[in-house]
Length: 387
Ligand code: UDP
Image 1: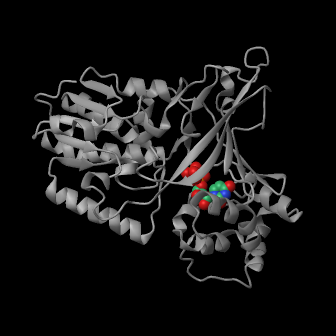
Image 2: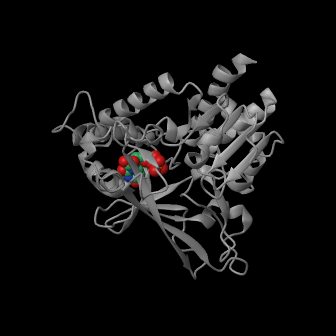
Image 3: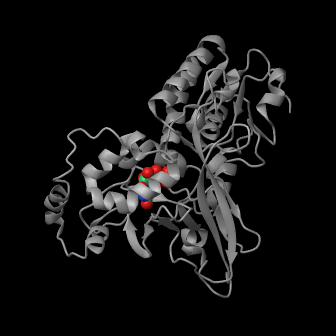
């Protein structure tokens, strides 16, 4: 890896880092080195083909690209064509299968009713008459205000406790507003007008975005092993956890991580859908991914060609910076957000060559489109101005 005279190095070949690398290479016409300690590009969005089944899988759990941001959609479309996959999730509660996010089908099935859309609001208000919260301040209060206590107890409470291992009263309300609540039978997981999967997979999408001749990618490279070799005037665009940059001096940031149990099953179709959530607290995993349902246009359900199926059972766990390679979800409570700000402020003041970016660096619970939008905006605001 040649770092002499280098002006830009990006630490982390995830979505944010890849977009920034592409912009610097294409628009600024500058050479940029991208390093990643993993053995692949694409961060947590990476996908590849499983040798045993021939099925493409998302190495870090199902990632659906969805957005309402035109410029992000246009940007992505320069590098990949999209399938018309529309994500629909089911959830299991007490051995019955329901539609998720909560919609009229979920509500009617749960209560054994046949409510019409115009009747649901009054129904939920009546459900909430004993527990009305004026200004919902946390995840639990917010969820109850939207769907009532019984639906919250059934579909949200157990799942949330498994995923976060924190009392839902201590979690920010906006985690739950990621999920729509609908008084009709629309069972789409997302509301966004643009949605799909890269037709040739995320792996190929990332190869394309990083294919500019000004970009050189170096995998299995740990920034902390090579940082002394980076020229002093090189901009270090860092997308990893920022507490380590200052030796955890304000204490480690808290994260959730996940562990996947991989299983190949000798049936064509195991669960009939790509993601099945498990709401019961007693079932230790949160969801099961069955990847072949993400690309049915590839004839993955043809018995003769793909007789087996690949599953990932997802278990949520606490992240430890010393033992776990992968932080997934920031725990954006007040204490952690303040700690992140302390780190950021000190890095800005004492390490002027650094720019902190990405979902991990910025400690944000972003979907993929928000990461791309932020990378594009960062480029416009910080780098392009200097041309
Ligand atoms: N959630 C839930 N039950 C579900 C699905 C989601 O309670 O069946 C809650 C849970 O608190 C979760 C949040 O909704 O953290 C956001 O879910 P989302 O599917 O957006 O999470 P992600 O896909 O990012 O893991």
